[in-house]
Length: 191
Image (cartoon, rainbow, N blue to C red):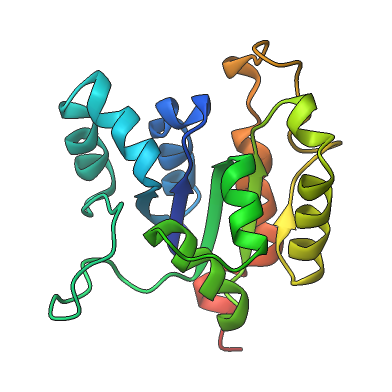
């Protein structure tokens, strides 16, 4: 199997976050060492339903599930990322990210990823009404201009009517496929 490196899967509080084992397993099959990072709201969702969900993600990835900043005196618990997949990306996180707000670990990592030139793919999940807001459109364009691959529309996520999302139709595979185009396998990186 081709080793691709370390992938940070950063999940926001949107319904697909309840199915993180799906993209984790698929990314692992594609050669990624996956680390799960959740926004605080996504972490709350995971612990609200079942305390064992965070432990299951830790066992699946082999890494702690991070959701908050560490103290300066603490060692890093995760290896450095070679790529990031922000999925699901909420409208809230999108707009904070475009404004370089880093008030959560997830936002801090993806904000720095732009400056560090870490290949980053974002797979949104929001409704049509949120998509029509001018700030959403501006944020998508700003992040694309900064080098972030945002899979919105054809070949990615298509916004749904409010309260009519189909969790089974979330295109996890589109995000994973896009990672192949933005991040070469580890064995070819230094060539």
